[in-house]
Amino acid sequence: MLRTPGAWTFLLPGFAARQPFAMLTISIVLLVQHTTGSYGSAGAVAAVTGVSMALFAPQGGKLADRFGQRAVLVPGVLVHSVSAAALIALALSGAPLWALFLAAVPTGASVPQVGPMVRSRWAAVLGGSPTGDGSGPPSRTASRRSLLPTAAAFESVTDEFTFVIGPVLATALSTGLHPAAGLSAEAVLSLAGGLLFAAQRGTQPQPSGRGNGTAERRTSALSVPGVRVLAVAFLGIGAVFGGMQVSLTAFAQEIGNPGANGVLYGIFAAGNMLAGVAFGAVAWKVGPRRRLMAGYAALTLATSMLWAVHSVPLLAGLGLLVGLSIAPTLITGYTLVEPLVPASARTEAFTWLTGAVALGQAAAVTVAGQLADAHGASAGFVVPLVGTALALITLVALRSRLAPKASGRVAARGMSHRVPMTVD
Picture 1 (cartoon, rainbow, N blue to C red):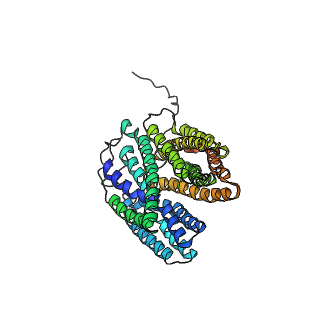
Picture 2 (cartoon, rainbow, N blue to C red):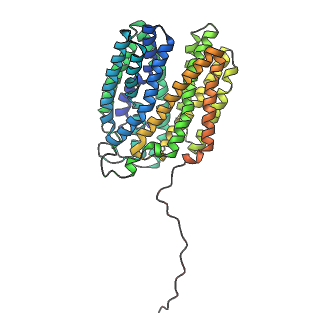
Picture 3 (cartoon, one colour):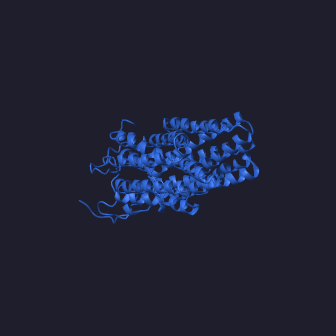
């Protein structure tokens, strides 16, 4: 997969540009908590940022599909940097909470969606979609298209790797240098990485605004029933991420060992990364719909036992199982986008899924935090279970909508009887 022509031209700047995505939430929490002295206020500002991103990211993806990734990414990173700087200035000046909320909205809404853009480029170079340089589609061979699940697995591992490094970097900067250092670094990396990624035009999918502007090219990703089903299902994955973060923190505090939180979440993340590597190396004969439902069933089963565990070794083992179950589910869901959605709407589709994860995570953080405060960490672990169970029920009930529509099929009809004719 990595030998695909042009892959490294967008992978390296894409990795740098998506790193700040994992730094944003923790950087805001550390900054606002330092200036207000309240974790509740810090969490509320971070939640506003996450919800804004979830709501506005798909619109940015739609614009990227229509006008090109560069046309959206360049102004987006500029707005994000200015908004983050405004949030820093307001927080350090002791501005009221409502002012921080106002600054958090554009900060979250303008978060560069580099991950979905990278996935869209993989779909273009491996699936045969035209790229922005006008050179035409790459070879649509079966071997090239068979690498799409591997690319989805690679992206899942990359995302998880950024979420291991990003929070550590942001925490080190905010606690070691200055409370605003983490968010400042996030803004600078977003700007620099986003501009470098936008400069790679050769692998950019061709904007649908070019050409004849056919009906297919103007199709919204959300008008595809399968995308709506996947977006609802991905809320469950967000519930796992958010519920695990809060509940593991509460559990570590309950046992009097706050440092165990980092170890437990690291094991959870490691399981996700390992499963992503293994999943991408397998040539699956089972269809993606069945794989997706099997992944959610395994995820529901793994999360169903979290609330009953009260020891660190057992919770670490279950956390590993949950992580091992998440990666195949995420990878398969992203893989389904390629056959379901026209090339002109794939970036938007990927951002709907990413936004659904962010929205589910924001809701889970809030609910799990309230449950943990009122009833203990065990109650917070119910949130991942409920989220994945509801997602599994949705998938089972609406699984037929995940099948791509057949195109170009003509119903065969029997030949009519012909009138007999005399021949020489």
